[in-house]
Image (cartoon, rainbow, N blue to C red; front, side, top):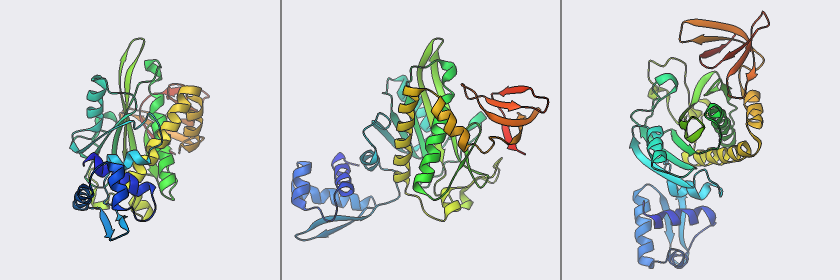
Length: 325
């Protein structure tokens, strides 16, 4: 999309009613004929734009795409989203973000895609990534923390995604340790962090976030390990993908700023409040070989699960699948 067309969309979002051709011409620094050409290009992209003589142009509806120009207009002045990269199709937004980070991309760079051919979940699992329906997003952060503290950021992105679901739907998600979001016990989102670090510090962290927004039942793979759902299936209401992406990135900005100022404590407290296992008895299965049971009492400073068994012993668990008993 041409940058001028992006400016037109931003003006449509910020000004009410019709916008005159003269006003658009002045704002864009182009002729009225050029404004008309940009309007024609937007219509070809699926935007429904009304043109009325002597009144101007008015946006009636938008296609369900994540448009970087529209997204930028919805983001607050913040580091998260200061640079947006969008692809129609990519192997993995995490892989793209990793390459950009290695090349020196600034903190807050966000990589989005309409679909992925190699979306990844935890433990090498596949994340189904069909086009036109979901959010596939990766964020580059460069916090001044030690490598062992990096897992804390997974919990930060989980809280941001949960807040965004509540802001854009009437649904109340739960968080499953360590990095899944559930609605009615079914997975609706997953988080995957990757890191580049030295012994004494972090070069960068990639926050990978996948949220099932508008998937239908027929679009889910038949061989899923656990039940999955989407916000559309659970609410019956279509989710505006750009609006959801903006809500999530704005919440991520707030949480990250708080994290840098106050540390992990506030994030951990909210995460534990939202966790489906807090205070309950759980069973942890580690790669199908060992099971540990006990009462989930929270997470420690590096995100490890704290589990108290019946004999009073405190277990610190760093990986495994959790089932609430």
